[in-house]
Amino acid sequence: MQQQESKAYAALTEALCKLAASCEEVDGAWLLGGSCGLWLQGVTLAAAPRDIDIYADLATAGQLHEKLQRFATDEPRHDRSGLYTSHLSHYRIEESTVELVGGFEVHTSGAYYRTEVGVLLARAAQRVTIRDTTFAVMPLAHELVFNLLRERPDRYLPIAGRIRQAPGRHLALLDELLTRNEWSADLIGRMAELLDQPLLSRPWREYRGGEA
Image (cartoon, rainbow, N blue to C red; front, side, top):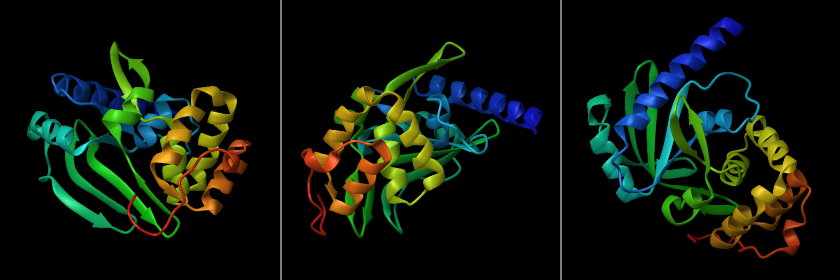
């Protein structure tokens, strides 16, 4: 099992480096998210990442698709399924499937959350270097709220544990996410409990059932 995981991580690293090289000349910001981003930030995962998720604003997603066209397995399309709305496209690099997510939004019965990569998330992103290639990874504050909204305790519990180790690195961005999007008091309370922080007493924007 350990040898299989080692091979999986080696193949993933190869694909990540090829992805980064292909996107070097893109003007806008893009972030490596999902299980790959968590792995690179030291979050405990049950298994090696199986695919690569990258996030960008809509305009940048168009540029990224142009750079990745030779790897494309479909064309970009507007997708609205379940909780999520985004502009999606897929690619195959080495042995890895890459999903490009543009203009990502999550709308639940208790929250409306949209990713703002260029103006917000990229500015707070950690930079991680592997094989002399540097990646900007999706901040853990985003990963916490996203996985809480999709009810993935296997993800949000270890993410919260990682944030609690150094809350000063993450809470300023979390505060911005709470004021720029819409949340129910129940969700804020759950985040507060996970992080052992008094979030309900800090500024946050109340969910009113519409789009933020």
